Amino acid sequence: MMTFEKVTPQNAHILRRYYENCSYRLCEYAAGTKLMWDGYLNPSCAEVAGCLVVRNCIEGKYLFDFPVPSEGGDVDAALTAIESYCTRTGIRPVISVVPEEKADLLCRRYPRLTLTNERVWKDYLYRAGDLAAFAGRHYSGQRNHINKFKKEYPGAQFVVLTSGDDPRLARFWRDYDAEFHKDSKLARQELERAKVMFGLLDTGWFCAGALETEGQLVAVCLAEKCGNTLVTHIEKALYSHAGAYPAMVQAFAAHFAADCQWINREDDARDKGLRTSKLQYLPAELGSKMHFAVGCELDDWDAIPRLETERLVLDEITEADKPAYNALCLDDERNRWWGYDYRQDLRGELTEDYFLDVARHDFGRRMAVNFAVRLEGKLIGEAVLYNFNWRGGAELGCRIAPAFAGHGYGTEAFAAAAEWALYRLGLDRVVAKCYKENAASFRMLSACMRRNGEDETFFYFKITV
Image (cartoon, rainbow, N blue to C red; front, top):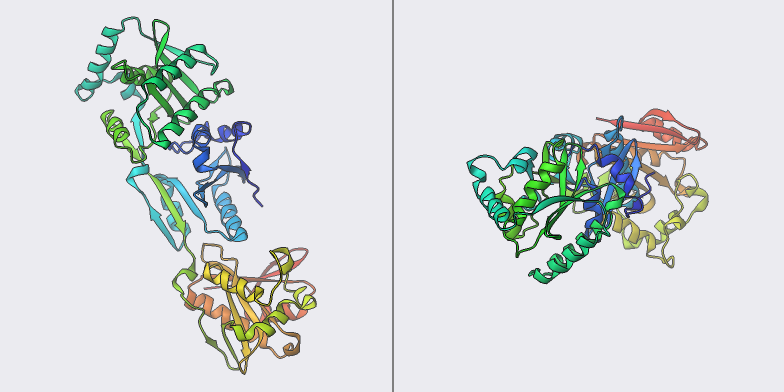
């Protein structure tokens, strides 16, 4: 079971252990992005199967980064852990900011999904050598700006920054604040977070530099090496020093990106000015961040269907069924073999509507189907299809009220629900389990499915198409 821990400066070394060799090239796979935008991303992390799994919570919705493996890490097992976590917690798997080269894997993995690949979130990727040299006619504009800057400030030099307590930085932020002309809340937040990020230089996770002239910093930059990519998190220059910005870009790339193939200058987040600026530096690629919202086979069903067998009807549980359904759900002796105690999830007072409301809520979110099992119109049990694994499988359970046990109704209802799941709903496998001491359930499952394993507690069964 994965346990997530909120990402903070105190534990971000865990992220760096994976990101320092990560080849995804996208800015989200960098510790600086998680720390700088923690108020928006609300990131948490877990390690599983030799992989880093990051869970973000954006506007109340959970999104998972694509797993980042260490040497020997198992991405397939990490994805399975994400799916199991989502099933257990009742949320949909959403794998976001997926590198383009991983898209085919997810397309083949999931039978149902919605793919989004928006232009606005694509990262600007530049060849490191291009920004370090600005060679060729197409970079003549940048060279002209740099030459003007050098002519006006002949003593300007590039300096490496190693401490957030550098007094030159404090002065730069005062100078920058005095010239800062953006009044949007987001821009102000970004500026304040930039100042905090420079305070983390002593961690060794980031590289930082500045242009200095006559003891004054006129441009600063902070970046992070991730695999063969230098991810630029912060670039700031004083507006009063024309040409400082491109001069900073070139000097920083020349000093820090010699062992990198790519420089990622992040996305533009719909800011027109940022987009114009980033395009002027002629990106070699726009790095796609694909968003995979995984679907469920139940998504196409607006209502619980009616199934008929020789003796039974399976359909929706109704208001009129509440007395019989509540008695079934409250039968502790019977439910010992059901393997679930409602008290574990009970919130507030147990009312006569509770169990029916839970069943309706689960179907409303398309997380489960609770079939009433009826004999001559009377509810005598239920069959529940649940624990959808997002890859074409689900678990099926069936329980019959004690007064109607021993007549084969459970086997009949279970077989009908399994056939519907496989041939109408479109699953490719249905699984089930029973306690080893439960002889009646063992007989029922053996009549409908094939046994495919056991452990100390359960026998396991499955049926496939």
